[in-house]
Length: 339
Image (cartoon, rainbow, N blue to C red):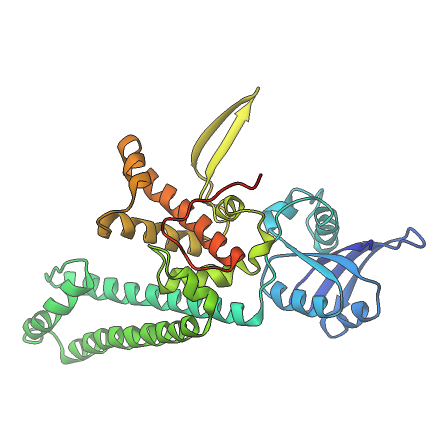
């Protein structure tokens, strides 16, 4: 079946649509209001619809798929290469229309359940930032009065009561009470973060795929749930190597005249998932007594950070293999290329 390419630049209230009418050859580039957007595609023949992967794109992709259309969510940097001339809604829709017809890796369309898990991760990440800001703010305020404490949360918890008792003898009571309230907010943030982690733990107990991924060394609750939710459909990746490249765990390349140079990792894809994988790999190297002969041999000829990233790359490939083949993690498994 041939799908008519359509480029859509989505926004809050007005969507710009670009396509070529196959019957008349007319180039159509018009704006649609939000309330009539789906009506325009309800009775149309199946289309290949391209949209930038931005806020709201996952929702509209699911709705268009329900209507029988094929949807590709394109990274913004991929679409940018096709935007020629001025930048406006009409030009963006045309650029998306051009980009959706080119080969390239699209962003996975996720289910509502997968997006719910990712939303929990984003909220937890935000709360952790707030907690760090709160701790740093308290340490900075107390430094103004000659009280210097360590950077860790444990150092703050240990020293804060004594520091506050000393300062209460010479500072106004209104400041002391405010400092005490700000310190109490740290416990509230701890409880909110723990509550989100308990909800993620509940999803882990109910989802077989997450349980299988969590058996991999270095993959804990956060990495397992984030990997399964971020990947979407594992069949969308042709190999574990492609998934690792999508996560940005492969070298960046530059080359000219047939000479290719490898640099640091590309850092493309999901920054949050890549960070979890790297922290998990670092934890394996620090805490596992026997990480394996492969890691030991690599550590003899490469710097420690390179070994960490290489192990994170291997973890990403293992996650893909466990999910795509639907079987439990086997520590001694050796992959054999089909004949």
